[in-house]
Length: 217
Image (tube, rainbow, N blue to C red; front, side, top):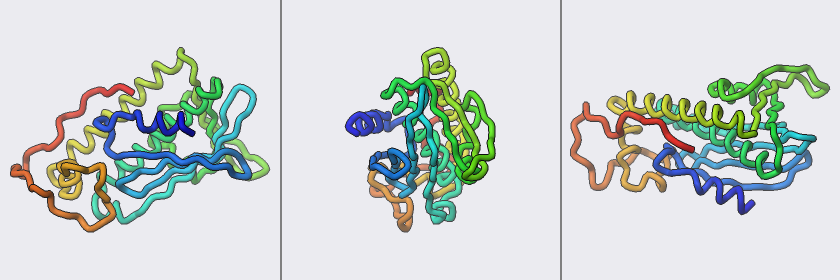
């Protein structure tokens, strides 16, 4: 657990839109990891099972609050994509800790829908009918040969997310206030939007974040 907390805390805050923490517990079906997104209250639960040569994710359950979509559609979309992306990165890190060369997501169609925005990240996809119902299979390889491509894909997703926010900040007041907040790591996006203190003097058409560059993991 200390390794997982250290890993999550090592994520560069300047390259993230939100802040994260992780908790761990045992369940009847495996080890449960939950990634928490601080400013939104969103969380994503993973159930991990070890198998020969691979780490299996048998549950990928996203819990989100629709109130954010009413406050800011752009922040809501960014919150969903970022927490899903970093949950996948967390599962890869767990596989590396256990010296597993594959991460296999074996999830329900409902859970699979949350992975579709980043489907290009996976090396293969398929679906099967099991005794427990239909399951979608997403596979990632964690050895160094595939890891470089994985990092490139992650960077591409981060850049596209940054470009989306960059284009929305002029017209989305909640997004703009959040990006300008002097201590946004402590801000709650589900509370009533508050004015900035002190409030920066900016023109409405001015961007408050720079056009995104390629980031590193």
